[in-house]
Image (cartoon, rainbow, N blue to C red):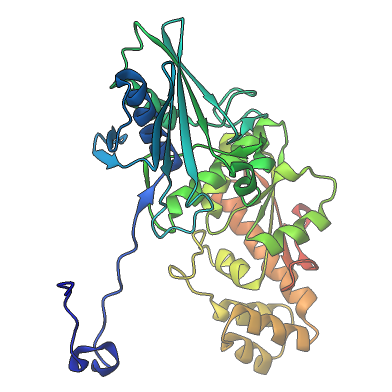
Length: 384
């Protein structure tokens, strides 16, 4: 007998009253690659210092909280070299590095101090704007501090020298699913983390990646930023602006406001926003945090636009009562008003973006169809 409670038939979910609200299960947090790297480094350093593998290590998060890890592997490879592996658990976050075998190899060296480097599967920085020197491994500042602290807890690096190499087998393959190459991080993943903890579907991490992408673009000397709401709109944006390098295109998701603030800070002069009807409608209404759970499409605004471009009252009422932004788009298309109504919608979005930045950015907005490949309407600075 396992001891686990098995509910009787009268308590199973299908028999719960239909009006009862069942509390959703909390999403499980996980660990960043930086935390896993610090744990692997401490385990390898401990094996090197004591001559014995370790089964459990404790490391500090940036908050000061201490957490424990059981390395999947920890071994002394020679009297001067040890290696440990910690398998990343990203919790319930859809992280491409979930399951990664974060590996630390710690080797003695003659000169006192700690040298940190990246190995196989850890990317190399090739462009400015990331807060790391070009040519250095893509191990961000906070993970660097965590790794250094973890190793210092078992080895006196003031009097002994060690070289720590962090590697991630399969990291190069994982990196293909990220924006690393566009940011100038080549050959693998980044060792990331600011808190040490991965929070499921973290808006903070997405926002940070958007802000970083803007910084990298500006560091290349580019002055036109193209914001896209997703992969499909980005394809349309690239077709519309083939003259711009890839680094100028940023998938902004719901963080338009954050991207615009960073653009102004970095001296960007022009922003082009490319989106579909729903997101553009939210922006036209002045909502710059456009996540579907936080804001709704104002089809009433689209009804007003219908009237403004000469649509009949019946069509305007129909558009105002539309189920979604896409439904309104289809009504405009059927009435032959897609071009004029879409252009007016884009003009209104451009005005909102210009107001948000106090006129610091030249703004242009384009609306694509639902394949993302065809631009059906656009504003321009001249039309503002």
